[in-house]
Length: 400
Ligand SMILES: Cc1ncc(COP(=O)(O)O)c(C=O)c1O
Image 1 (cartoon, rainbow, N blue to C red):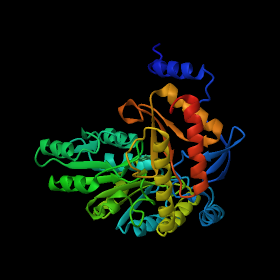
Image 2 (image 1 turned 90 degrees about the horizontal axis):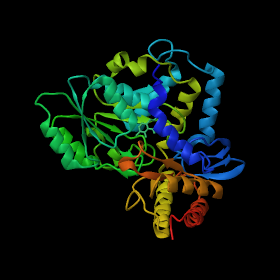
Image 3 (image 1 turned 120 degrees about the vertical axis):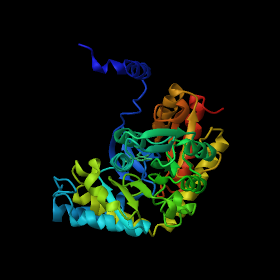
């Protein structure tokens, strides 16, 4: 018998080597208690959370929690069915209405996760004879959507408008073309030049899909994302998003003004062949989305936090993923996995949780400590975070 798991031997060895040094497993941390959007108890220690996607801090919003509890009482714990059979409740429709209002778009389709939204929409609209032109640093769910649909994939260099234009010119005349971009790239926290990229794509006759997973709620005047901030939201054909970040629960969606959009509900396999979200989840999502529309103060505070942390880390001597803060994500670049893991553990011991990100999730084989800020981080917490980075950075030799 060929052991089908032997393909993972190298990874098993790297992991065992790392853990044999006595290091805490960075990918197996348990949150014993979650106190607030910014604080949890980990290994018995009060820990500031700087590695969640809870950008707008909605997870403990009293209205959101009340809506979830009410839906649980009124509709039970789950739908036990697909959206196209018994799994569409009033709450799913209300959630789609909330998204249509939030984005000022004609159509919204809610999926069970953001991963499934990308998987479903991409594989359904771009098939075997179509071309998908995508940024090489695209999220795994985008690549998996391309693979499921069997389209021809044409990657281009990260955030390079000229490279996108060149690739578009090489595609056979008359072929179906879908350009896929992200608003914020989640590893380095950099944003896409959507204005230029959407213009180039439209000039070449391509449809455009933008994944705004990491910008919804925060970026843009109304929190609609980078496409809104750069004034091109009405030129984007499909926006993909998730409830697992600023919305503060779980689920995914696509919004669009395309007049034929509703037919996708019948032909999109990751929408049809899976159970719909529990009523409590769609109720929390709809309430949260409604409140995010009016989150201007929170957005302003989150920008303040992002700027302060970026400037502070830079002043301490850390190498960051972007020259200036572009989103709520600030990536601290580590020289290698060993150093990254040591720094991650030193921060945890100080009482700070960040994400340790490593290849293949990261671009250019980088090891990163990914910091994601929350609108609920206080000024004092950001000061504390900087103090912890200084102590851990000196102890591990990451800074002098
Ligand atoms: C860019 C991007 N798209 C989609 C997703 C998937 O979202 P979800 O957690 O809802 O599956 C993620 C999750 O990290 C993401 O970063």
